[in-house]
Image (cartoon, rainbow, N blue to C red; front, top):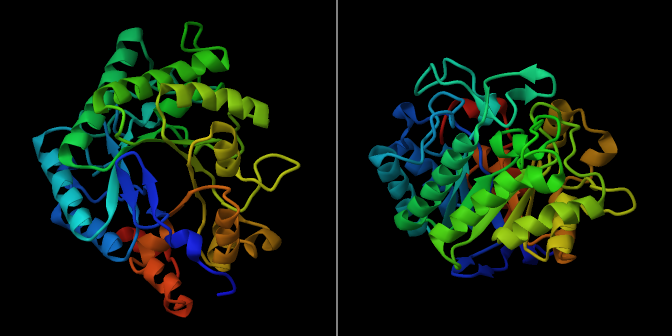
Length: 370
């Protein structure tokens, strides 16, 4: 290893939260919760990553208490006695192993298709009844629907605090419901929730405000957002730093403590004329700590095969560049996804200089929990 890993292993403090290092496990949907409640296998899955030294675990997306929140089979809920009891077991296991944990609260919006559990008759809900620009799906939300979803997120955050979670992440990225309100391509409303950036932000701002009201001033709220969407990898919410600043300020005012700026490759610059990535720009403009993410620890063959990435970009994807960016205070935290999914001891091996022992990610690992 050509650089000191110091910034990765420095503690991080915010309000009542103390993390033993700056590395988080990124939220990754696993579909291993039959009956929509975390099983012992799920408890053990999170425990192993905490035992592997990860500072913060962000759970897979877990759906709020709204009829249209879920879009996939065997996804855990964040409501109901059975599911919440399962999450309590997860929290206790992670804490026993020295880690901290946030649930990721999630509503899939128009990604949901009729026929999906728990009630196959429920359609997708979205700002304008669009899955993507020009592609209808489900129903456009009424003001009552909007209020119901805001309440569902607030209920989930309140339950998270009661269960002993260390904070909460609100999923506002990747073309799911909150992002569908943010994205002009899927938000064609002509009321106070559509049109201008200020109006398109309103739904997310009201969710954050409601969550803050329920959890109090010292419970960390993280918001995950992205430019790219699963519907369109090239989509943009903002095109300039000035637009990004206009986007961030209302969210800061509403109560966001940490921004989780989701990119597919952490080393790629966000705007011309600067090497800063999306998390770097977000931290600079918001004054809030940010978490970066994107292909950390993946092999060249995997990245080039999956993302058709240019060779020169792939060569920059190593740990050295990550450490350099963190040394430069570009972002405070880094989330690691598939590398930790494949190898629960990835962080320990990196810290000890045992890179050769790291298990490279293989897609077949998605088929089981370990």
